[in-house]
Each structure stands twice: as structure tokens, then as C-alpha cells.
Image 1 (cartoon, rainbow, N blue to C red):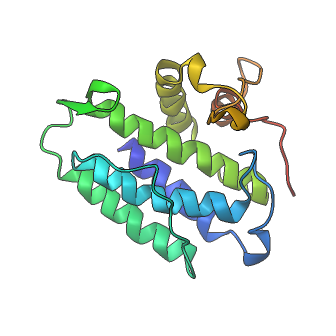
Image 2 (tube, one colour; image 1 turned 180 degrees about the horizontal axis):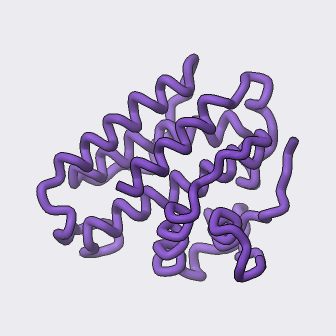
Length: 190
């Protein structure tokens, strides 16, 4: 499953973040490495809720993940994978806040979130592990379908995504994904 490959790469990146990197800036405008890692790790719990057909409350603040980020990520990623493995018909349709969507849409949204934040954390901490081409291409296909113009704009207006950055058509898929999500592919914190 592509989600498992995305989670494996994210787990490697999270495991290599050092405590002195927690305050580094990331391509996510107002989040440092620690805040973004916390979001990614806690997000896995909310994704698990979605996997079993319930509605996660994304408005609730995420608790701080203290201690072993890599261990917490691994435990929560395994629980998420197990939740998806228990879904009897991944080809079915499910009601969501976006209306009735194929369950595969929900899975691919999670792939996109994990892949993009893996890129963000790897880029911010100078790591080379990025989502692989297939994962990034699948995430980008989802994003092109789901990320509507009305979701873009400045954070001060409550928007989660900035304007798309321009990159070459033959740029690596992880960079094309980042650019589509409003990240500057040339960002380097370290």
C-alpha cells in the first residue's frame, strides 16, 4: 500500500530529527520543526479515526508529543496501517465533510499529508529521504483534484495553503508536490 511506503519514509525522517533542530524553520510558514513533527505524529491518530469511518476533530489542539518522537510515530503509524487493513471494502464510498467520496480518496488524502510533511521536515533538517516518486505522484494527483483555489491564500486569512510555486515539468515529483502545496522547492533551513 502506498500509504505504508509514505509512512515508512516519514518514520525515517522523524527518527533522524535531533533535539537541536526542533526550533528550525520549515517551509510551513509559521511552524518550526518541533511544531510540524508534533502535527504529523498527532495527525496519525486523527487519520486512524477517519480510517475506521468516524470524523476526527481537527479543530481540537494537538497535545505535545514529549520524548521519543520516532517511537511515537512508529506506534501511531502501525495503528493507522492496521485500521486501514481492517476496512472490508476500500472501494466503497463514505460520507465525509466533503460529501460522499470513495474511501480511496480518504487514503490518498492521508498519503498527500504525510508525503508533504515528510518533504517539509526533511528539507528543514537537511535530510535526503524524501517521498519516493510514486508516493509523491499519487499525492500530487490527489492534490490537483482536491486543493481548490479557495483553500489558498495568506495564513492571516485562515488559509492553509499558499500560492502554487512554479517548477519545471521535469522537476522531481516531491518538489512538484511541494510547489503545488505552496512551498518553495528551493527552501533550505540548514
